[in-house]
Image (cartoon, rainbow, N blue to C red):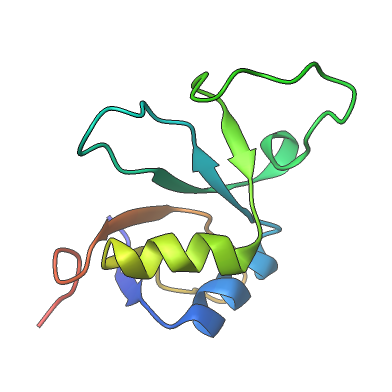
Length: 107
């Protein structure tokens, strides 16, 4: 596996996503007690929302594109970090994993 870097600073995360044309998103989850929204960064076709589609009922299991401020509010509330592949000249990896802070950090 490639070397990884753990990001928690908002600007570093935005820069990483922007370089890969990533968009912040939240996956609909059940309203059941204790269930937390699942954060995602989506790429390519998943980053486009179809404005003509019918409204889905709440918690229908789809991905909702959100503003970075909303995404970071939840990111900080859940004390998360973004683990990404270390940049290598000539390659633009989009590997990423959202983990609890401390879980993906090395030494």
